[in-house]
Length: 195
Image 1: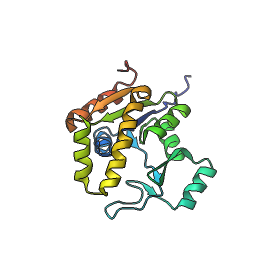
Image 2: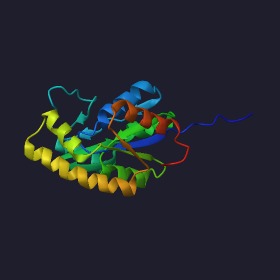
Image 3: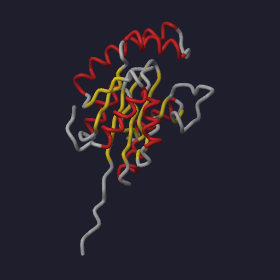
Image 4: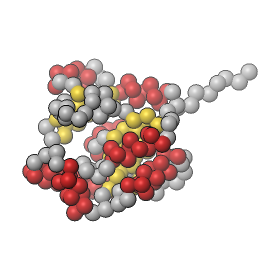
């Protein structure tokens, strides 16, 4: 009698600069591919009025975040613009053991950390068509001061340089639907050639 083979899920890391549309792309990929689970990160940053705890992020205090780190409950973590962000390990491990495809929408630093723990993870970097368009998108969000937007643009330049070295795929978001379709294609054909 043959034993049942448990299917391990696939881990996808999606990164990109602020304002590039990665959150929108991830949400749409999950809507269209029911077997895809997007992991919700934890953060110490304040919750915006439109955000829901457990949907955009798990909003925790600095002390709670330190406890998660100390107890080894985070797969990766980083400080970004004065706030801590991290990936709770439990949800990722559970979804992978259930055979799901798990998306981690995290920054480049976190992506490198995840690849050191899960070398088989597939990494996708979302790029803007150009830096002028990224600047326009950041300003259009109206969420931050001009100084904060400038810091994000400087970080974006560094991240895009690192993406060339560390990421398996690059997707330019110059057309949202095409970018979504490209990411879906990558996820659907993970065992194929990397480009």
